[in-house]
Image 1: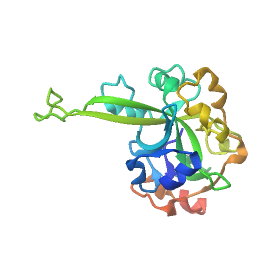
Image 2: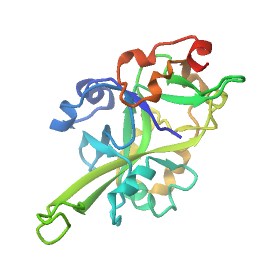
Image 3: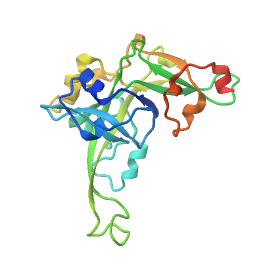
Length: 246
């Protein structure tokens, strides 16, 4: 799975790297976060078929048919093996695919003899961002308690929520040292095909495979990352795993 990642690059840098033509005001105002957690807003690169855009969407997919937006809390990841068929994801997989840029991500394991899990920071050896394969949705409706009487009656305000999820698949040989799954990472050669809403989704399953093991490196980091309130750059610094996970 992928439940925590680093988003430290600026909107301008991401736009250049991913060939984005339009950037939203929300994206330009987005602050670096070295401990991005579910239910927060995250960078998303997507296309309407003619223009590639950068925006910030809620992390945790809310399907269009959802009665309660809290369903997104459980849909932060979509499994590559079932994404084309699962009701929560299949509509988005057909037409609303995206890329979630990430400068790195975290995973946990429990070293032998340790009392608690050890967090690890995973990044590219060349320092470039990952391109996580993702999906996005647009949900429209009323939120509970938005009416003047505290309910969701006729006077309740209509809202639009754009949300996203990260597709995960089997771990590559390197990542398997930490965990049996990892985000699906798209090579630059696949970005156009993946983002184009007109692409036949049957052509995309070939992309939902483990990234080359050479694409990742990792090191142990402080257990401070366990607390989502900690968001600073220091969280990515290498530490002695014995002192961190004791």
